[in-house]
View 1 (cartoon, one colour):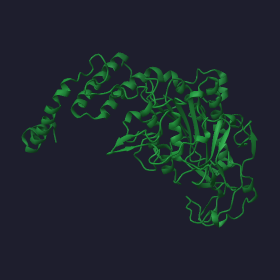
View 2 (cartoon, rainbow, N blue to C red; view 1 turned 120 degrees about the vertical axis):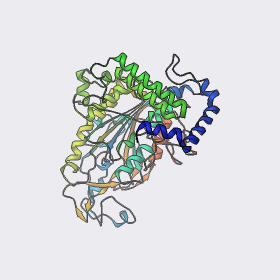
View 3 (cartoon, rainbow, N blue to C red; view 1 turned 180 degrees about the vertical axis):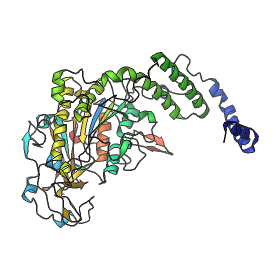
Amino acid sequence: MGELELQRLQKQTRRHFLMDCVSKMGGLALFPLLNACQIGSGKEGVQGLNLSERDLNPLASLAPPFIPKVKSVIYLHMAGAPSQLELFDYKPELAKYDNQPCPESMLEGRKFAFIRGVPNLLGPVAKFSQHGQSGAWVSDFLPHFSKVVDEVAFLKAVHTDQFNHGPAQLFMHTGSPRLGRPSLGSWVTYGLGTENQNLPGFVVLTSGGKTPDAGKSVWGSGFLPSVYQGVQCRSKGDPVLYLQDPEGISRDLKKKIIATINEINKEEFEKVGDPEILARINQYEMAYRMQIDVPEIMNINDEPEYIHELYGTRPGEEAFANNCLLARKLVEKGVRFVQLYDWGWDSHGTEKDTALDLGFRNKCREIDRPMSALLLDLKQRGLLEDTLVIWGGEFGRTPMQENREGKTMGFKGRDHHVEAFTMWMAGGGIKKGTSFGRTDDLGFSGIEGRVSVHDIHATILQLLGFDHEKFTYDFQGRPFRLTDVEGEIIKEILA
């Protein structure tokens, strides 16, 4: 239908006449408020309508309810779930029973992603030894990390209730295995804003060639305003698409274009009052400001040679090492939450790339030096005192060797496991050189210090200055929180 014909019908039909009357009556009721609203009068944003400074600038830096231990977070997520039994959870008893049938008691009443029938137990593929003053057990797959274990706190008995990658990743990053909830990074930037108004408060960096199985929902804002969702940047090529202005478009002209677009957005906000319009205004302005800071911050070429050697960076490529260095640069510039996703940790043993003694070991080589360097670099710059670093996957791996259709795989691999896996934290407020939780002799279940995903979220929020039970957002008639109706602070790893 043509635009002129549509306008003619809108003026003549009774349905459109009644709709127009309703909107006009609403406009009369709101006139006293709107008349006091002066938009863009010497200050960007929308004034009047009882809007707070936070409405005008949703990423403005805020103080948390109580004194925080940290002010920024770097979360290293290994998408696909690394095997704790080849990295941190040393089980000599499991080695004794290598290639023996799994006890029925470990299988009865339990579901696995792929294992069927009675699989054989699989002893540790890696060799373990103790390191540091803490005596932490670390395998020879992580020789660099073994030198910094006294900086971290291990959680040895983390558990989840999701054994498929997508739901488990959603659960780990949003507190729910279903779509629609805000990610951890979105909650943090909603609560605290960011210290650098020229950069997003929540930045996402990926490596491994793919994004997580759950897709971009793991850094989405859910029902929070979209300004709080993660902004994905790239370590290869332009860090953000369309960062450079088109040829012939000057920065002054770009500023005028954005100002004109936002004047239209402000008029639309006057009509409907949708907070997403304010988010849109802020995002246009943020994109404009990012053109100043992002090229410099996302450029690692000018870093000193000793820093490149420390991290093992490969400038110009997509690499976990590059992303670790960028994470340090971003928190140094005031970014609140930096999320790194490294894909390729699903070690089923179906082929060489997923074999524990081949592909998995190669993945460990890719992360070992850079994640260790990140801790050292943050510490030497005085940033580790107020930065929280988190490492982990979405679940663990079984003590049994994977079989499918009752047939053992051609390479050594393990199935998904929800009962127990290892994560670690380091930085401000964390008790250094400690280990909390313990699994049974075969590494199947946590028998001491079991912690849930909600417990981890509650602890992270505590370190940032929030009571996880009171940090809520009203949606669909009730208050929601990251930890749902669960979560206990893991006091045993807090300094």
